[in-house]
Length: 212
Ligand code: TMP
Image 1 (cartoon, rainbow, N blue to C red):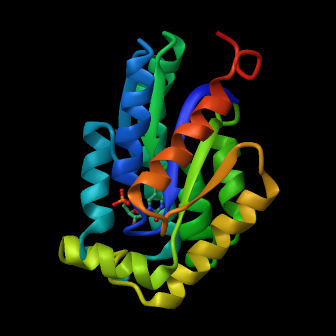
Image 2 (image 1 turned 135 degrees about the vertical axis):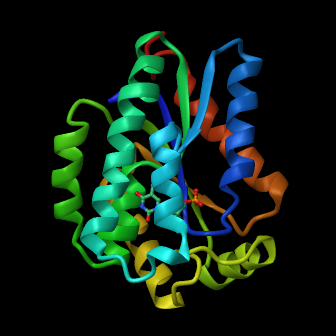
Image 3 (image 1 turned 180 degrees about the horizontal axis):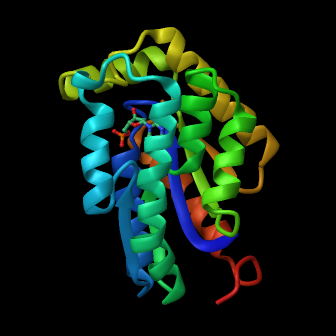
């Protein structure tokens, strides 16, 4: 487990960007070095793979190709950004990580959680986020929010049932790992969401909980 590795998860429109900002500012106010990044992406290759993965020109891509491209981007991200940052003692705050592959490809695309776990065991057997904030929002609400923001990408254009399976996938892993995965009820007011995120961060960084 990497204690300084924090990830943010959730379905579309749940407020990940705002949550990222809150976490980054909170850590920086304590004088910490923070590397803020995202998946798929975070490196030149990763951003190219992201473009392929999200574009409608890839409509109909097989679920297997999709998950392998996610992990190809992740392997590059780990090698070039995440591992070096953690090694020098920085915090890494990442918008999505392997839990997204479990939820989207494992549950959403029905590849099965175990198959994704095998890829994770191969690509990063030694690294797992210390803390994951799961912004949980009723699917319809999130999709309405996301649609207001921009034209739907290849994932956002999926039907509601896909996102319901993803939400169930997140719920399943949150139940399995209640220490690491903290659920944030994202339909609350922005102030309530912020207060809850800060409470989670305070509890997580309390002396004795993580090493300095
Ligand atoms: P974002 O736009 O929320 O940053 O994420 C891009 C899309 O990629 C989003 O719809 C979720 C999807 N995704 C997966 O399906 N599997 C993954 O492993 C990751 C990291 C993202």
